[in-house]
Amino acid sequence: MSHVPSPAGSGASVGLPPLVPFAKPWQSWPDQLKTLEGRGLVVSDRSAAEAFLSHVNYYRLSGYGLAFEQSRHVFVPDTTFEQVQAAYDFDRVLRDLVTEALEIFEVDARTAIAYHFGQHYGAFGHTDQTKFFIPPSSRHATKPHDFKHASWLENVRHEAKRSQERFVEHYKLTYTGFPALPVWMVTEVMSFGSLSRMYQGMLTADRRVVARRYGVQPRFLTSWLHHLVYVRNVCAHHSRLWDRGWAIKPDLPPLPEWSPPLLPGNDHLFVSLLLLRRLLGRCPAIAPFDVVWKERVESHIASPPAASNPLGRMGLTANWTSHPFWA
Image 1: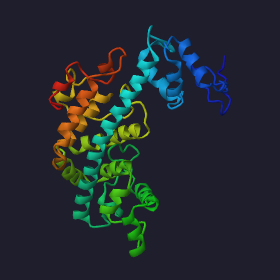
Image 2: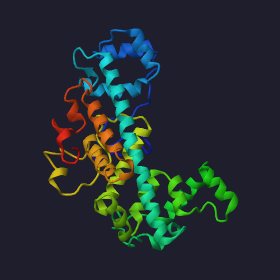
Image 3: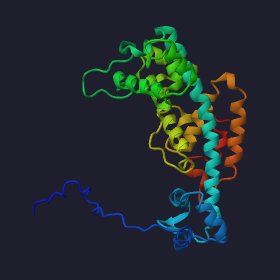
Image 4: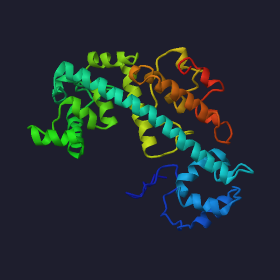
C-alpha cells in the first residue's frame, strides 16, 4: 500500500498522533487547585495557594511540579502545594545568585574584548570584515568559524539605534557616522549574545589574547560564552533553572576535573557553576566577590527542594563543594 502524505500544513509527523485544535477551557484559581488535587497534590491552605496562583501563573508553577511527580500528572503521595511553592522560591533565589555572577563576568568580558580590539584595530575596526575570520566558501564550514560579519554588524547597529544610553545620544548629536560607534562604546550597548558572536568571529590570535585572561583556550571560551548567554537568557526570562537540562552545553577541556566522576556531565547547573567560579577567579578587580558568592551559593543549595535526588537534578555530586574548580 502506498504511503499517503499528510495534508499540507497539518503539522502531522510520521509516528506521531495527528494535531488537534486546542480546546481546554479557562480555569479559575480554585479550579486550577482542583486540577492539581486531582493529580494527588495535597493543598492544606486553599486561600494561601489561591493567592500564590494569582501571583505565579499556573503554567509557570506546574514546571516545578515535575520534580515531584512519580509519573506524568501523578504526584508522589503526600506531596504538598507548599513543597512545590518552596521549589519555586528556591529557584528564584538561585537565579538571582547565578545572575549576579553572570553580570560580573559579562561586564569583564565586554571590557576585555573592547580593550583588545580597540588597541589593535582602532575605534571602528569592528566594521572591517578583514579583522574577522572569513569562512571558506565551502558549505562544510563548521563552528566556531560560521560567523557572518555583515549580519552581525547590521544587528549591532540596530542595537545602537535602540539604545537610550546618554553617551550614545551625545555621540549621535556630536559626530558623523551614527549608528557606527567606536568599539569601546558599541560593546556596551550590544547584547551579550552579540558580544559572544563577536568573539566567535574574531581572528584566532585576537581570541587567544582575550582567552589568556581567563586561563582557557580560545575554542573553549567561545563555547563557554555561547553557553553562558543561554543561561543568562534562562535567568532573564525567570525560567526554571535548578533542574533544567541544558539545550546549549559547553565544550570542556579533556581534563579529569571536567569529567566523571568529578563532573557527571555538562548538561546541568553544576557545570555552569564551575564555569562561573573559574571565570570569576580571573577577574581580580571584583575580589572578594567570588569568595562571598561561593559561600552564598553553598549556603543556599544546602537547603534544596524536597524532591527526590535534588542534588542530582542540578548535576551536583554528593560532595560537590570539594570539586577542585569549586573549592
